[in-house]
Each structure stands twice: as C-alpha cells, then as structure tokens.
Image 1 (cartoon, rainbow over the protein chains, first blue to last red):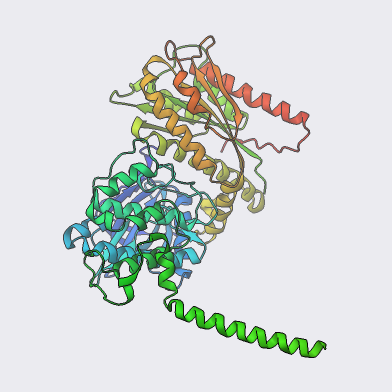
Image 2 (cartoon, rainbow over the protein chains, first blue to last red):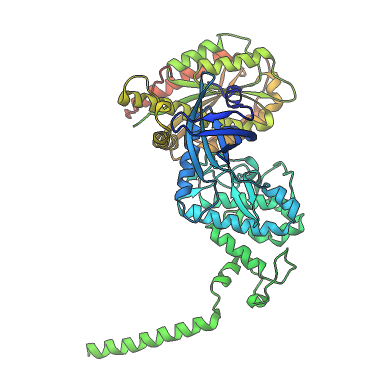
Length: 329
Length: 245
C-alpha cells in the first residue's frame, strides 16, 4: 500500500457530481473543492438548498477517526470550536469505494487573512475566544493537537473563531495524532508530544507570534532563546512577552489561566494597549512582578480582607481553647 | 486483544541499490516474518531517478509497508508520519482478522455500517497508543547522502520524540550501509532512546556502493538475535506474524 496518488484520483470529483451515500441514501451535489490535505479532499456541497462541507478519503479509517472526534465534540456542551457533524457514509463509483463525511460549512477568512483585513486589534479578541473553547475541550479530556491559523476560520459577523480540521484532536495522555512543525513544541525542543492542555497553549502562543511573522520562520538551534529573539523584535509581541513566554514554556496549567492573564494584561493601563478600551480601575498600583500578576487578579479583595479573616479565625480558636480547657478541668 | 510487538524496518535512501541481494525480495522475506518495511526516499534539489522511485515503491509494497518520497526539509514530518501510519495499517490488519473470526467470511471493518466503525477505530487507536514497537532504521550512507545526513539525524531524533509520547514501549536500532568495513554496519543496538545518535552521526563516513538488499537481510537477522536473547530470559513474548493483508 502506498500513500501515493491513488487517493487524489479516487477523491477527485468534478463540480456538479452528485454523491449518493450507500447506507443512508442522502444526496450531495458537489459545488467546488475547498481544501486538500494528507487525509483527503474537502468539497463545498449542497443538499437541498443547504451548504455543507463534504470530506472524502479512500481511507475509511481516517474518516472514521475524524468522525469519532466530531461526535465527541458534539457531546462537549457549550463548545462551538469544531464543525457539527451531518452525515457519514460511503460512495461507490468507478468500481471503487470512497468514504466521506458531511459537516457544517464554516464560511469565512482564515485567522491570518482576517487579521490582515481587520487589523491587529482582533488578535486578542480571537485568542480569548479560542482559549475559552479550548478550556471547555480540555475539561472534557481532549487536546486539539493541530492548532494553526489555516485551521482557524473566523465566521461572522459578529466575528467568531471556529476550527475546521479536527484530525489532530487526541485524548489527553496519548501521543498527539497530527501536528504542524512550526506550532509543535517538540519541534522547538520545548516539550513532549504527549496530549496535555499545555501542548495546545504552546500552539496558541506560536499563533500569536505568527501574526507578526506571517511567513513564519525556520528553526536554527531551537529552544526558548531563539523564540524569545523573535518576540523581542516586535512591539506587539513585546507587550505580551510574559504571557507568550509562559505559554511557550508550559507554565500555564489551563487555558483559563492563560486567558485570565491576557484579560489582566488588557486591563493594565501602564502601557498603551493594543485596541482594548482601557479600564482605569484597580490596575494602577499593581507590581510589575509578572509571574504573580494572575494571583493578584484572583485575590481581588486585597490584604485588609485577609487580616480580617485571620483575626476572626484566631479569636474563634482562642475561645474554643478556653472552652476545651473548661471541659477538661 | 494483544497484538504483541509491532516490528518495522524503516529504510531511508536516495536512490537505487547496486550491490548484492534484490532488496524487493528481501522486503518480501521480511513481510513473511511479520516485519513490515517502510521506505522514505530523500530528495534535495536533485530528483531521484525513475529506477530509484520504482525500487522504493516496490520495496515497500513487497514489505507490506508504506513509501514516501520527500524533500529533505520535510523529512522529520514524514518519518514520524509514515511510521505511525504503518503502525495503524498493521493494527487494522490485526483487528480485521479478529473481526473475520467473529463475523466469519471475508468481512472487514469497511463492510460494517459507518456507525459501527467508530468503535473499531477506537480499538485501533488504543492499540496504537499502547502496543510495543520495534523500529530498525536503515540509513543509506552512499556518497550522495553525505549532506543529507544531518537532516536524517534530526528526523530520527524527532521520531523518537513522537513515539516516546506514546504509553507503549519503543525500541530502536540503527544500521548504516555501506559501513566502514562491511556492507552493513550496526550503529546503535536496541535502545528506547535515540539521543546517542547526536554524537555518533557526525562521525559517519559516506561513500561507495548502495547494498540495500544485504542491509535488509542484516536487519532481519538482528530482529532474530534479539528474539533468541529474550527467550533466554523466558519472558512471555507474544509474536505477531502478519499474514498477507
């Protein structure tokens, strides 16, 4: 068996072709090709008057694998990251059999194109949306794996980030199924390829870096110092340096933690922030100690609250001790 | 279900063999012994000639494995992908055979309705994560490979990174051909880590002939050696022999 051109020829169909499923007899009219990858070809198709995306592959197991993930996504309530699944079937033609699945058609520019059109202001918004979705996905025991700008589509309006390729989505604790080198921490020598939330967060950090280097860059020596060099050269990246560096080094345990750090940064008026309206509340007296910033945020109620609590606790324990002494003697 | 240990030979070359046994026959021999042979052809600016291309395809077909011809820059991505795909392919074969025993006849996963395939795929995924894997890597060190060797080293380190993220055990062994004195030379005996390649690889000398066939033959006997050694330790070691899929 070879991974050569056999797939291309079996999965190449002309616009206008009608695909009829062997098992469910649903019919789909092919409009045009919209994507092509290692595991198959994706077409825009119509069923009735509805637009759908139809992915074909001669490898029925890779179709099955992706369908499994989409089904798992459907169970993740509140997450709209991936496309919803419409149908799975086989199509018999030209004496061969092609497996396909049909999903919601997610229409819009990809992440980098959107940023190019609408401006860098949107980077933070989209990253916050993405982190929110990742948090839900991680909670359910999955890791997205192959996060990259090409796989991120911005629907709208209102702009909403969505993901179109779930081929890399892996159960936590297993080896990442699919990845792209530039966004892979293993490639940069900064971690394993085990599926854990911090793997996705590394990719998110690389996507942020990617917005300032749309053509990406090649690895020389790898390691954190090389990536730091690229951050230092960009004003936008420098502003988020501590957050990007923490994500690259796997210091965030969860997507929520990284999300809070970004929100926190946006509400700190010390530097001119990119695009966000600055809140002039409690942020002014915050220390520059970056690693503690998140904690400062979560313990919003200041030191006076702590003193109060400690005082109450010690008084109660004192009274209790007196009571105990009274019981004993 | 226990598929035992998966055995693979990974051949990295940039052209046609020109000495000794027919590599296609040797690959077929490997397949008979339950060892699949995957081949990666490395191009740089130069294109591999038609004979080389054909041989690469024929070896992998006879060896029940996968072949891919790539530019040197894409080697890391390809090496780990081909190895993983070949694993999945073999495991699908195992699962298919199991299914045939249950369902009878020549039914395979593909004959099941799509809804049922999902569960089978989960089994394959699970096996791919936990199965023990042995990969014997054969690196062509003929003269034209000289400037590609640093890339090959990177790709092999990357492979061990990918596979060691699994929970199953891995064992790697590396041979080069031609060797300094012999047609084939052992560079690294069975080991779970490939890091030591970093120090060995730069010292490699290249040149001379391309004895691909003898290299595969040597690789086969190396699998055997390990097996007999292990039987001495009387570990129960289930072998999986892949029959024609």
